[in-house]
Length: 304
Image (cartoon, rainbow, N blue to C red; front, side, top):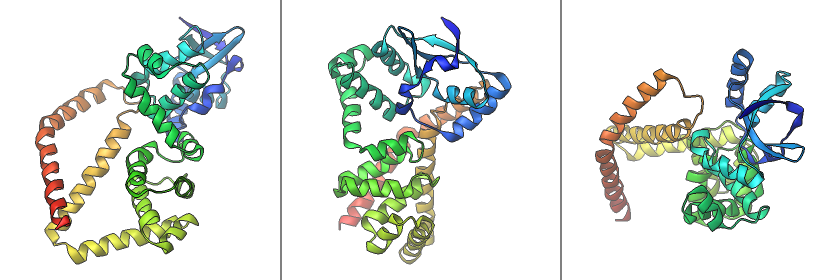
């Protein structure tokens, strides 16, 4: 049941576990200014406290707009059941994997639930829980903080930096220095990937420049180097294929990230996205096989 509560009654202790997205919050602020808060904030009531678990963007927007009362719904009888309910419904609410990991850590460390207990309550496999526990353990406090503040994209850590670390045995201290150097610069995933390559494998000069915060200079050097290498080694047709592959990688990454955006709800969007997604899926098997063959053949030539 939804009720209206005073905003100053809400305990925001779990705000530190949730991802900040300034761009999404800016859009939400405009929406709330026009239409008000349509979706209730969610939490649990413990004695005389209302502990907020979900709706922190709406909470901050309400504060900015001097809104004193907000819609609120209880989702559990205590903190643990509330957190479990929030994670269980995370597909609909776009709870990121980092946020899931943070909340699972709370369930384990504070509420003393085992991985098996959490998995059973969430109707997930134990490996699903263990993967999130392991992910959080391998991340430093610096990396977690930068991601949750919205200064470093979680995707860049998960699919660029993390894999790079595993392949090259990079130290945690170096990872922290790199993340600190590039955070808050509004860089694309591709730029972060390029900078990571330069920082960890590009030599002492580029390493020092990135560490000192000379990001624009470093990117220009790395991109110039890429262009020179392609022009020297690749034919015009080969350069065209490389550009196509770069675009595919870029838009795959963007689609993965943007598809979770809770603002994408209009009927027109749903119809068009469904048609396009269906067309992509019909080509996916052939496309996947083509990419696998390309990977296998080019890798074989490189080894020779």
